[in-house]
Length: 309
Image (tube, rainbow, N blue to C red):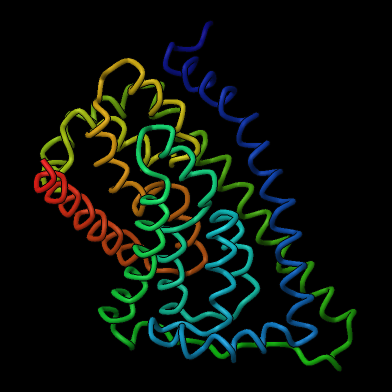
């Protein structure tokens, strides 16, 4: 007996998503190994301790230690996976981890994602400024609004040079192996979920239901589908869909620019956000602070364009 059509579609979605998920996971594995090994070497020779002490006066303004800056900068120039790899090597409390997550989610994979936004019509200089300043503002808001009693900021645990190298190597292998297994499973599961949402038309139906919410954000109703794509797939993964919508004339350049101001600091709220939550960050703080920044940026842009016109 042939399986029901729904099962056929689920199977097709899995077959379509699995190869891509494995490629992404394998790339993540290589990146994580290199980054985490590099961090361990820096820690072993005391470089992390030196960086923490040097940068602590600046990062203390947003509730972060100098160590946490390394996670943010790695995410800024590489991607969220790189930031997660560094985070897993540091001893961050829940509060500090959440602040770091807010900043990294606002400004990560800067080279690739701003290139996508430029291709859709926004100024690359403006997008870099929006995302960078948005990350700093988000970190400050998280530090200012989050109760100090939520978790604790654990002290940096930099192993002394005299500690046996074999002990450090074995500890790194265990922690990195656990991280890689968890990330591998999560990426495959999320990729499969994304494909299912598209296969069964859930994203299209949700786009209609979300139009009133987009009005609050200052976004046009025609941007609802792209907003969902950016939130589910992210800027890099959703680039093809976004460009197709623009090429087909379904959304104007001005509307895309407004959307880019929103999703620049608030996108990929399925995979990337969950990755930080899996490390111990607080979900609602990661989401709501960036949504507030996105709301502020879009309405500021609308006022600016109206004044210019």
